[in-house]
Length: 366
Image (cartoon, rainbow, N blue to C red; front, top):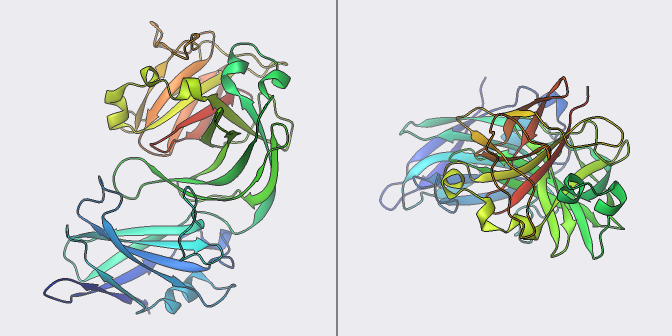
């Protein structure tokens, strides 16, 4: 017997009842639910694709850990009442949170860890199916983030020099997730992290994702350089085995508006500055590498290294990377990107939140 729960949507003149059925994740067995502490439901308005704040919401703390997805569904049955947004109802979104007091406001730039999410569109029906996607596993793992100035490396600096941080900094872990409606990605988590010692931050946090999310590292040197970027694993340019290598971008380059094409940002709001490397020792940048994305979700521009003012210019030859191995990716999602070079093909996830720029250092190793 299928279980559903009713969400009462309160409009100005009528009180319609919309039944929601949560469709449990197909890979639920691979993602424990013991750390899920709250469920939040959004009634999204007609303008949600262009206005992130066009929704009404309610949040409910759960009774205890160790619950299954089915038990969570049963506990929240009949427990939510929401107003309809003034713009009308476009759909229902559900979020499963992990964190202390997960329904309380969190500091700017962070949320509880997002364990699952789902959306069902509303087109006037009396019941909305909401397929849930497992986004993050409960298990924490030791994380050692090693941070490097990517552009210093591109210009020939040694790993020691590119890893020198003269001020305070740190790193944390979260996820970047494609928006459930509209273009771009949303960021969740970043509660787990630590200040850096030298260019290294050591802490524990979740690293296993599901669905179409990427594990994201936010790290850098305060007021100087940093990124929030997808972590793909594999061979590193500088970091040792077992370390998470994180590319930093100097703010003089990141915040140079001339490095961005406004028409592309309007269509693909996430921007990634990437570099491709061979697997020699020491690593060197790779010319002739091809970076490919589904054109419906992004485009790639091959560029030369920044000048003294932090300005990068597009190469005349747009068939592959030049000697610097540099490219700029514009995308509207967590993109699956194919990189070919050095006789190797790699598929990596790349993404960036719309108000910042991500980095990527991709080593073409088997």
